[in-house]
Amino acid sequence: MNRETILEWLLYRGAAVVMIAIMSAILYFIFFSVPMYDLHSLYMHDEIIVYHTKAVAGAAGTPIYIYFILISLRVLFMRGITPPTTQTFIGRIYGAFSLIVSIVCLIIAFLIPIGLAFSPYSNCPQEKLGNYYVTDLELCKTIEPRNWKIEKKQQCRMRLCLSGIHV
Image 1: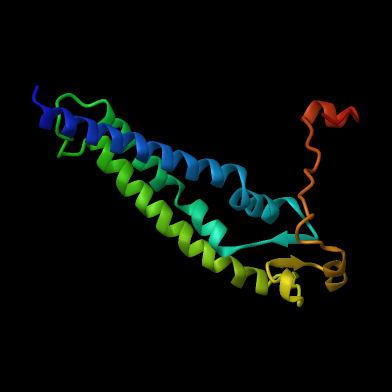
Image 2: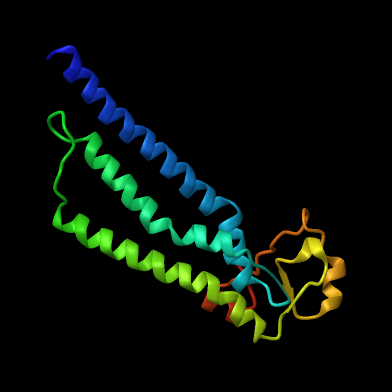
């Protein structure tokens, strides 16, 4: 193998590794940071909801990030030097599926505030609390944006709940 061939091989493999690292970092951020925090808030709290459209829209891109990881893995473990030029049948199906799911989720992300407007929730009038929706405006006075955390509600299994034991 000559030097140009080796450099081309390293370029494609290096780009695949960098793409996997970037997409994995984005997925880690989505699953363990603000976007999931907001989504948890939508269904965990009865009185206070935190909602950022951008965070939910970012979470909507999850199927596309996974698709890029799969493409990068294919390039990383391919035979030969040049990357594959044709898609597999499964790749085409998953690519279309991830695109449709992401578009639908992006639309839903922008429709949720409309749904909150017609619900019993009110937007906090304070400037720093614009992303908080509450059932009673008096609750806005108790919110400290930097310290507010979601408390998980206790869930229990059917048998144990009936006996009064919560797990």
